[in-house]
Length: 118
Length: 360
Image (cartoon, rainbow over the protein chains, first blue to last red):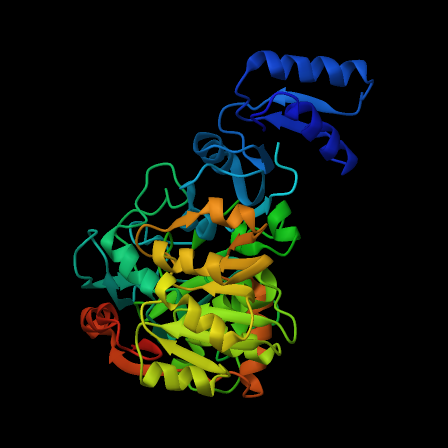
């Protein structure tokens, strides 16, 4: 799940490198960007990788949020299954917070990465 | 397993006393319920001690009531009590290795043993069962309880009230320190909040060889206990941002890990300020607004981890620590079962050092 323009594809390729083949778009902001990412993945011949829309209510094991905003973070946390991991890349807007109680109750892990901010 | 509303199996028509939460926000009331019989794969424990927990207050207040959420199956009437020690009174069919009369403690999270979470050793997050003794199924505020045999663990030769402290207060702390924070020898660990769980976080982190600094609003006896448990410094005051310079001074350098047992907006903001770049924040507590400032955490590339209860492996390791005297179970006060409301009142007062325990 990403917000930025080229980021969907970047995230997909990075996760592919980690051996993750089933990618779910949870909160793509722009449907056209998602389509472009799908097309690009197809052209690159990454047949073993699937990029699909998340069925309503289906939990995910991990979520990657690029260039985060509060709404995207909230959607990502809500999509995670208990024990899941959220990777936040880039700086959230000033004052942005998340509910630590939800992290505790579902044993969620949040990994913040600042260096690769878009 | 039978529930309060479905007392299908009963011990030859016998009844027992139980303190039942019939409505959120109300006192528990004494009721006569059938003594449970063990189904296949189950045991019945004659409860000798049931410790109280802050989460019992949350449960009583209805704080877990959230339609469609993790606790969707949680509907009164509820027999609370998830920290149980006792003696096996009956063993059901298909149970091996457990005999009546065995002293045991109860691991409160029910689990299937077959889902991916269970197979990964994270039975506290079981994807199939997701029920807990003392929440969705009847718990320890009673004379007997039926649990799956895999949830009953033979206990060392300790006083039952002391044993009842191990499955939750100590095991939850152990899980946070060992499995989540993965504290290493020589690391600086800050513990925010030294109630019962915070004291054991302090103890376990010190046992792991960490340099532990603790902070809590309460002073005196709790602080003294924290020092006894291995804290090299204990600071008194609201563990919010205003206490950060003092904590950093006592720690000598920014913390490698902060374990927040309070979980309020104030302590979470302090935790972020206390950590070195790349440090780990583990959140156990559930208090107040619980807003974690992600903008500040992001700039420092922090790892933030929730920590929920414990796993059976944690409990087994805690029992071994208790057997060799490495952890001292703290019992603040004992109450008869029918004084559960008085005990809950003392718990709400927040001054107890150690667990309050019901002794049926």
